[in-house]
Image (cartoon, rainbow, N blue to C red):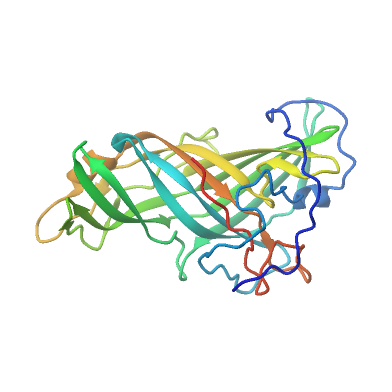
Length: 313
């Protein structure tokens, strides 16, 4: 069984901070940009899945890591509004390469630390989640069970913006990734429904995009907000320490569903597709894979993430 590289450090938990807000002015934090970019560990009381008894998790080994390589697990729920239910997205491996932090002096006098990182999901060598099963009452009366997978269809980009103010730093992080929902198999009232080998959404899932000119195309957008109080642990979400990420997504129409001349595209589109599906994901503490000595309690002995988060609705 996997063990952490060392026991957690046991720092004092920070008190809950105010709701993160943008545009606050004040004196910049004296901490160096490198320290801010790394981010502190989120306290166990604040983060689901903080170090403790490690649950089982899929492999998350980074091949050929660099000094900026990170890995983490993420899991959570996505509502399926049309079916009045929620689907559990299983614990999934995410691997990232951190970009260089950049100091940005704004015209309004505020000081920001910006960082762009890129990465991907990884499951058995593919950029996807593990398969997961969901059961719903289709059209309100027919129990339907489907095995699904989310496949990455383009770059996963993480953009962090930390407003440096005194006595704390306010972080806002956007994660953008195009994901196609694929149906592997389905049963209706216990009877197998042959969806064929290529049943999937015609386009990636689509979220409202706050900067459509800069980020065109359909993709999932998740937002995490956090607060880094000087000398204490973080609250909310910070890339390196994890936390909650939320968003909303439209499920597009399906294509390629059915075999033997039977077209199931309209059936699945009518049952599942539509807007207004709330997404809440919980990311665990990252493992700094490529450093010589990983921080206590963050990595297993073979450099996989030690923290396996628990989903929250």
